[in-house]
Length: 250
Image (tube, rainbow, N blue to C red):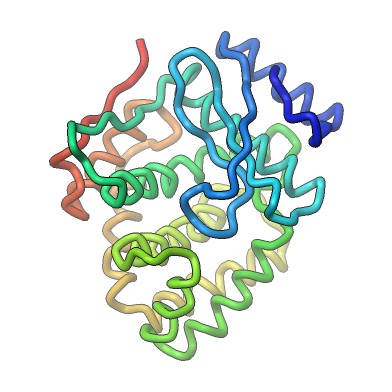
């Protein structure tokens, strides 16, 4: 495991990362960058055939617990690709960065449901401390209508299409917590309020959420083939399937 000199891991995280390295046969390497594609995120996984690459934004202030949870989360993205053989995108030539970001966000939307469940089963919290306060803010914004909601999510990206996908992904991730996770009563109540508020005030976006939920329910996304089929159908839904191929490692 190749670490950053200014970030020391707890025994719990170290043991989890070593387990991933053992099961995947891939070393985990850490890199640092202030730009991870979407504003405000702490860590990102990037595919590499020979190792699991995690890039950290050390300028983003987070508690040690949340940073470690983020690292566990991103390492698990590598685990599901290298060990469980989940699919990844292969882009055709001359594909622009905006298209790649849109496709990657579709992948993340589905993979995060799987990854957060795995880390919860391994003793990590499925979301960081900022998640529930953010959901509370999103509920307040949603009551003001779609236009204000779009302005709110514009804080995280300058790309209007990515902004729309981000809004939809926020609902799907929240729905995934309710559908597949063990939450305490207050967490479940708040997340349920968010999904209901989203459904009521973001009608145009919720139409896509309904279709995505149907796809997820019809495929077992916790298996490699089910996840790959679901992602392919969601890419088709957003007309993002023409310049990307989905592949699984042998």
